[in-house]
Image 1 (spheres, helix red, strand yellow):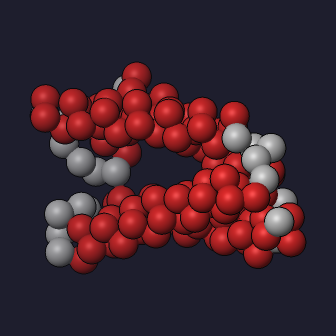
Image 2 (cartoon, rainbow, N blue to C red; image 1 turned 180 degrees about the vertical axis):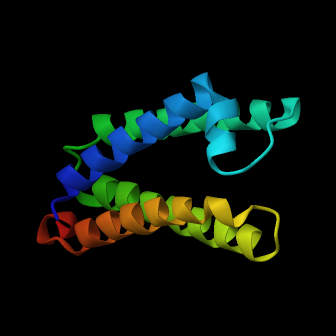
Length: 125
């Protein structure tokens, strides 16, 4: 997969999920079976703002090359890997309901997109 396409996919996905968390944290949390007290809504909006920023970075840097491109791809793999790891752990120990397990697929798919982009010859120049 081309790094440009990976950054575009990652950028759009981050902005979409970020906007949903920022604008409607209650709905997003409910979709994962999580209650939405004030503290959860605050953190959800904060995560939403961060995701929107990540999406903008990915989109605006979609034509990057060299070390900058490699840093963007590795950073995105780290984000997806850590999210997969921590959410998986939270489901196993019961902090997140099993209803949230579907969200793990998003991290697997996006992680794979960025790993495939890192394997592209154009990401090594």
